[in-house]
Structures are given as structure tokens and as C-alpha cells.
Length: 391
Image (cartoon, rainbow, N blue to C red; front, top):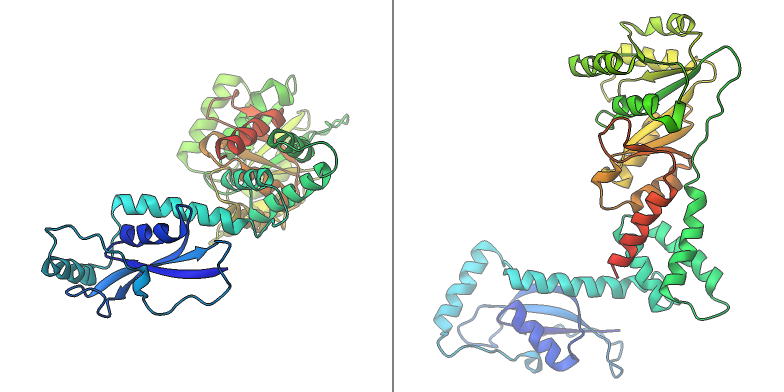
């Protein structure tokens, strides 16, 4: 691969010079301001771009370090004087080179082309349709390594046999993804003891509202006796919301004043079927009372612990949250705010990375409607639409 440098009075000048020699399809590696070195009187600085020469006759020689006159084709208007050009470059020197809106848009398009060209090195032996689907997976939030593994597995399944189309590639990916989205099923105890369920996770993830949805949605614990236990001081707003919820639904709410009340509260509600525990978030400055809450919860027999993560966080944040709570025995995850992210592929990478089953998804604020346990088709539809829209 050969790299060539082209210069001009502006970014667009340099691009036109490159296209005049290499054709319309060029891949720009970088652009920068350089000294004139006498190529044009009265102008101190020029714009240089470095372009990949993919022509058949190009050789893998090093890129020229000097500004060759063969690469210069200035298109100065008749009323533009060296004096005005000098003023312009002086201003640019003071303020730094700023792209115009047209230049920025053009550069974005060129970078997209270069990005696609470079990504072919991730999957060098695969046909164009596979590269396009790989791009689609990346754009909807699937991490690069996960997207690459999905494409490799798909290619191995479809490489032999009849001609492969993009539709067949997408259908094969669907077969791979569906097992990841098998919901976590709870088997309710037949004994006389209630099933304790604790929702844990960071502030703002929607734990309290999710508990309200779980307690009232008919697809989860219909016809079961339910009780909500708030284990910490969440503030007046949360307590008020729980009390209003209790008044509307008839589901009991117990606001504990101390973590020491947890064991006797469980005994108090031994005739209930489900006990939901709403918990405060772990933080860097954890108070002793919050530490005590988690110590007491850890001692509860047959406790089902669900980590709540909202879909608006990026994958690194989500993994950080999981690591923070991983000292607790986590049984599954609930993903909230799915309606607030355009990059639903993050869900696939998150499930793959933390290796926990998905228990439910929430895609809105309405109680109890906006929670699902039959989420396979919902997530896949968003994934499929995202892949197709990016190609």
C-alpha cells in the first residue's frame, strides 16, 4: 500500500488534486497545515492530505516527504490576491485551522469510507455482504470482538452450499442470538416460606419502579401474595411513591428503619408468597448502614438477586456496575430504559460479557405495562432493523 501527499490552498483544493490523479474513490489518512516552502508566492501555509493509493500500479514505497509540484493544482479566483491569502493564513495561524461545514461533512464521509476499508482487515477473507453486516452490528452497539465472532460463526455455517445472501446471513445470526435471550425462569417454592427477591443496582437504574411492575404485571407473579420491603432510606420521594403504590394496588409496603429489622421482617411475612427487597445503591462512600443491608441480605436463605442495569449506559459502564456488585451472588439481570437507547446491540454484548441470564426488560415508565419477559422477538426486531438501516 502506497501513501501519497497532496496539497492545496484549502482542504477541498487538496482533495480535488488527489481525485484528479487517483480517481473519485480516495481514502484520506490525515490532513494537516504545512509550510509553503516557496510553492506559491505570498502564501505562508498550505493544507496537506495523505491519501492511500490503491491503484494497480502503485508500489509499497514510502510516502514522499517533500511537497511535490506534481501534486499542486491551485484554483485561485481572479480577485484573490496573495495579500488576502496571506491574511487568511495569518488568521488561521492565530486561531488554528477550522474546517468549514462542507469540509467537515466531506471529511466525515471520507473517514467513513476509510473506516470501512480498514475494518476489512478484521475479516480479510469474507465477502462484502458479511462486511456490511459486521458494520451494522457495530453501529447498533455490539462490541467489535463480539461482532467479529458472530460473523465468523455465521460464515462457517453458511460457507458451504448455495449462494449466500445478506438475508440468509441475518437469519443465521438470529439463530445464534436467540439462545442468548432465553429468559430466566423462577420456580416458586411449594413450601410455606416466601420467595425473597432483591433488586440491586446503581442509583437511577429504575429499581423501585421495576419492583412495582414485577409486583403487578400478570406475566410474573399473578395471584401470588406479595409484599415490598424497602431496606434503606431512599428519600421522601421514593417512600411517597411506594406508599401511593400500596394504596392503589393493595400490595403491602414495609419501610424499614434499620438493616437489623430484615430477619424479623421475613419471619413476620412468612405467609406471603413473594417478598420484594428494594435496596440502596452501592457507592464509593458507602455508609455503614448500607454495608449492613447487604450483609443481612446475603444471609437470607434462597434469596434471588437480580441486577438492574439501564440500557442508556455504555458497555464499559455496565461491566463496571456488574464488577462492583459481583461479590454478591447475582442470579440474573433486568435491563431497563430500553426505549431510551438507539444502540440495542449493547444488550447482546452485555449478556455475553457477564454471562448472566436476562430475567426481564423494561421499555417505558408505565406500571405495570412496560415490562416484558417475552423479549426475544422485541430485541431481535430492533437488532434486525438496526443492521438493515446501516447498510
